Length: 262
Image (cartoon, rainbow, N blue to C red; front, side):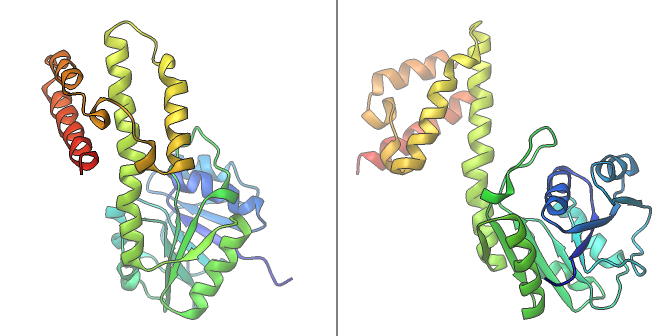
């Protein structure tokens, strides 16, 4: 076995908070943590065996071979422009929607993307063994190293292009972010009626399970799927107190009606 990989993190948000300890548990040495918010860097460093807070973007003396930018999409370019790296360093970001080319502003020939296809919050642990890790490198060396690190974490490491990753990201927004927002709306409706949102949990779990088991198109149920216009009209009337929710209900119901009437 060769020498262990060493990584430094730029950013200490939700992704870094899960990814850095997971890398360390997989045998990667996590050295320095930089964040615009030093308190966040300190909190993350305290979760690591060898993590130390870095106060600036001058990493020229770092012994790490991979530098992971895990910041907001809007901040990636600024970091790439300002970071100072050691010779032959690999610089990557973890974004689903930002192209690899944004890192071209950095003074290194080795740039890439290390994108874990998962939703992250600091309050929930993530099992990286089941998380798809999508990697991209601008050269064979970078892609190979990212693949090596990825396989330490996950059983599902795939090389995808920036264009493919952006398509995956927009699909993930529908599957994850929009789905959760529908649950927020559902919870509001339950609470407005003085009912416990937990009543819906078995239904939610079964819906997701059905969709994964038999496919989303086959798992669709409900009044719009059945073409029950009377029930749809009743529901729209019940939502008169919230025109935005009414509009969403109409739009999605019409899409379902149109799709299953073909």
